[in-house]
Image (cartoon, rainbow, N blue to C red; front, side, top):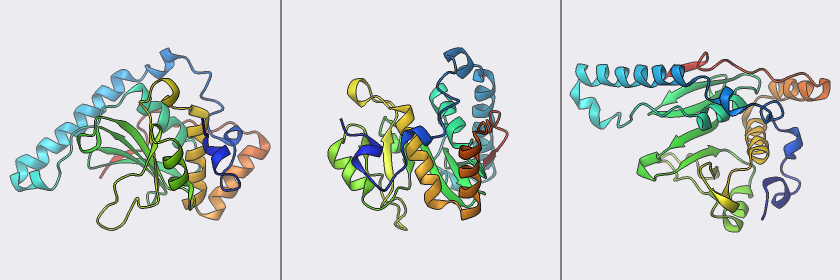
Length: 215
């Protein structure tokens, strides 16, 4: 089975440098500890949607989104991404999205995107990575649909809900996310990340939803 750092030699960093080091030892109990908070956030987002539609029903065609389902899986992803310097989170059309300083996208988390029935993470990757991984392991990777503006054309989609040989590798996912970050983040923030790695500083785990805004 091809792996991210192996099939794209020279263009990526190994999973040993990923942001998941402090994550793997967490118990399932801690992963579910934010269940009450996630439920509240879902209700908040849904209520915002209702208020918008009450103000102008014509908005129904413009905001065809629903409150996302915050699960242990999405919480695990956000802990990895938000441990990177300068990354924040916001909701966009019902999807959980991560940005560097609220501007440059690092990854999009999708749960049943446009009714596809899958859970996935979309990330920008170095040239050639998407084509190679999708062709080798279509059960684990895919090409995200391209937007009207051409966004996502070269991004990599990673299925998070696979089973068996297609089950997500969290070390590998951490490496993909970190490479996405290094692709879009400004040099001084990449330098800060390297400094943390060199000094062995623990990654900063942002408490659930403190950086969450609604777009």
